[in-house]
Length: 99
Ligand SMILES: [Zn+2]
Ligand SMILES: [Zn+2]
Image (cartoon, rainbow, N blue to C red; front, side, top):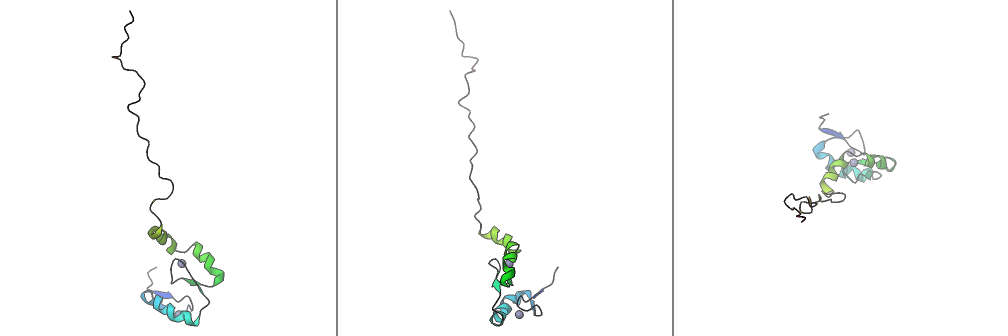
């Protein structure tokens, strides 16, 4: 899909160039104030009955997570240092002279 026009969320008959949709929505929201705004993308607007479903699978959600989420999640686990100086005594030169 490479359609540069998108449908106005307030009135699907409004076909607006993608670059203009934000400005168009600002005008339409005065006439159709009942839509809820997607928290992930201000150009996504839905009736209250649909906004929750949209927020669950909003296509802008993943990219927002990448932008805002801290890079490290979960516990930071350092690799355990290799124990090299606590080997059991198996030194072959350590001879016991039993006389
Ligand atoms: Zn419109
Ligand atoms: Zn959205």
